[in-house]
Length: 236
Image (cartoon, rainbow, N blue to C red):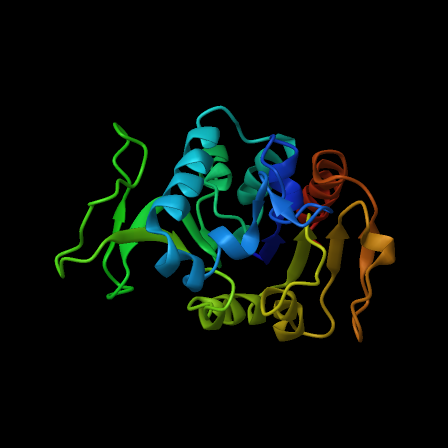
């Protein structure tokens, strides 16, 4: 069975009603990213950062996977499918994708700020990280999010997955945020690469032959999935 690796970004979740990480005004839900998404912001004001991510958690309750998320699940009947997402929501899992790697962390989890391996799910009853919620080391628990200025601990695992791909799908991402944007260069040179994004035609991916679909994920991806399923049935 051939292996498809889907690399997804904010655009796929935007169609479910989740705002993209950085809108054109440089704000995220009316907050400066520097004030809520950096280690410096965390150490400056636990309360503000926790409030911001707790609000994002509450938003997740009111959104659902869209046609793009569901289309990726359909591929699993014909292919081995890995999803590598830059998104921190759980819409891929809720849609039914069986293998999802979160590069930038997960909104529904919290972790120790002194031991990055101490990670817990957030209590579904409170649906928030509370001030005074401590890890075994007596330190405040923080969102399980990779902030600007932090390393991306799952990059090596993601690169290994991409190296084994027979087909790459790039969905809803500008391919401008590194190191995630560099994942494509771990793929074999001769495999098909599909890029589904409204600005796909405006994005340069050097030294790669790319099939560009300049549409939103919800409309462009289902067509690609139909094509790939048909190819699989025909033995291609």
